[in-house]
Length: 502
Image 1 (tube, rainbow, N blue to C red):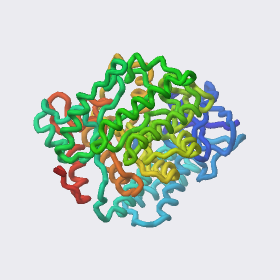
Image 2 (image 1 turned 180 degrees about the vertical axis):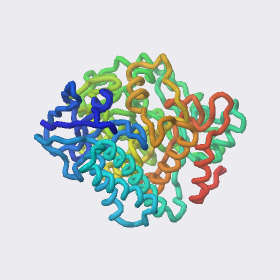
Image 3 (image 1 turned 90 degrees about the vertical axis):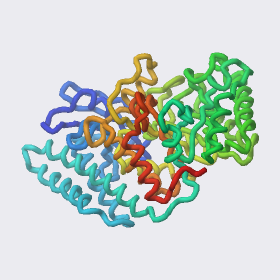
Image 4 (image 1 turned 45 degrees about the horizontal axis):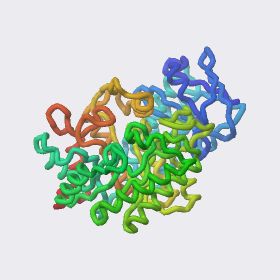
């Protein structure tokens, strides 16, 4: 048993909501199902299925935000019978991590970066003998997080030395050409060379065997005029809300899932041969969306079927296996959108491991990153983990708010979990605004573009309302562009891109 205390700046136990976020993962960052006992005094008893482990918690950090942070004992992990204070351990681990990243070379850390790193080290040293140790520890964590983000971004900027051919700057473009928005089409064309098309079965076949491609056909025609590359999303998805009533009672056991999958996927791909040749083959099949209550191996086999059908219908097409919750916190919570809750549900990483074991062909790892509440260095290291599959990575869905807005009152339980818990946090400040959204976009696009294994970035969506409330690049009420749109345009031009590509 591992004993953990989580102290705020006053040396008191953190809020109960923060204490209950603590979870353990293995050294590959795969979470275990949370089985903690939180005592009345705030001490947490953690029952570890194995060791060593990494600890993760989502906490309020004065001077930095409300974010997930990790403690890993400087890369060694924690074992049973240890008694630790999480904040100090997270700060010590962060300092070690930043020093290791700087030691890799490839860039010269800025004075600001080195100053924050030295501040963190000094505060940790002073905390060893100070009555204000808790305050110093959490401040050390805050400046350490800043230092790590500066390392990630400064290293990325140093790597960017030329324009990358064929890089895809994308957006969900379901309302293109934005006829009701003043200059909407021109603004879209000025920053994007790639767009996502809506292939949701509830739209393309609301009645069984009566396909309706009218909306998609019109979008394809419009994007083709502007030489904007397109992707179909998603060809298959076991999600109740986006699937028609006729598909909800299919069963893997009687072969009906397989039969309809083959029919639908092949039809989608064949219709657009020569026009659309990138597809999200399947969406969120790592136990998250599983309305047919399939077993894990069945979900992976279904994924392979989607990819095989794409290639059979069009050998030139690219299949993207799309995933969400890249750090797997929902696995620690034992949460799914629809379907079975296993003792240890698949994360995107373990799901792709199973896909690799099955050996089917797919061209890219699809990554969703809605408001991840992880710092830029953590995101860069997440890329490192997924690069192990030796596939290009496509950021398929991105969204960061520009203001605070609650989720729609009609949201179902799954979306409430996503939007109020998983996609909720504060970065550097305690209120989102247009400038902060633009700052996040600029830094995230920089670390992503600097990686040759990242080939596409897709913002979701162009205009409010967006899935993440306030995440659009245009205001809903009058179509005014937000600062993030101008920041994206400036970034692209600094890297040598000048859209439109007509």
